[in-house]
Amino acid sequence: MLDSPSIPSSAANASPRRGTFSLVVGILFLVTAGLIAMAAITADSFVSRWVLMNAPPPVKGVAQLLSKSGEGQWPIGIGLGIMIFGWIFGRGDWRRAGLAIMVATAVAGVAAITVRAATGRARPSNNVEQGWFGPYHDGQWSAFRHAYSSFPSGHAATAAGFAVTLAFVARRWGWVSLFWMAGVGWSRICLQSHNFSDVIAGLFFGLATALLVLRSFGWPRLDGASVG
Image 1 (cartoon, rainbow, N blue to C red):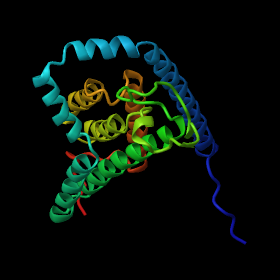
Image 2 (tube, one colour):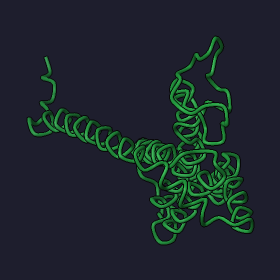
Image 3 (cartoon, rainbow, N blue to C red):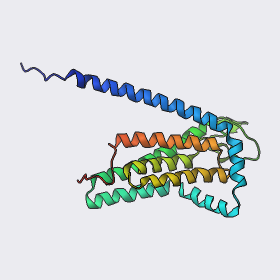
Image 4 (cartoon, one colour):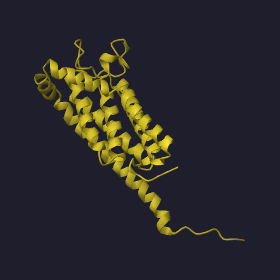
């Protein structure tokens, strides 16, 4: 009877070590994100006042354009275009990069929308009341109601999912999208759609989603040589 090939002990131990390391990094990321979000909550009023004081009508017009660009269909469309380019020209990395951009953008946005349905935080533009009310408030469901869907920002999460992914797949020039991401976050505060902490939390959602998706897709590169 043939003996089955033995697996080197170093290889056998590598996978558990990687799993433990990933778990520790994940926990540290969550703790760090939570602490930063809590600190941002204390700065909400100050940041909002400062942004609004420096937002005359022309600036608010720019904010509206940036906010519109942060809606999911636009960055997902860019990812789709990159993926189609990869199909046409037989570039495997481009196909995977485009798909990664689409998935990271969509998942980040959906995750943020799902969580804010549970938090029920009133938007700054809600003139009736401010606070955290959960999914059910004052005898009716507040989940998915616009006035009670502030935390976290879906626009910020979507923008971060797209921008962080693009920054990794196109390392020579993709980092420019991070400035756009910051602009989208600023626009949500300027338009009184979200608090500062809502935006910060949304950015963390997008960052985490982008890194997980990139890892799942094998860290594709737009300047890679993969063909097929």
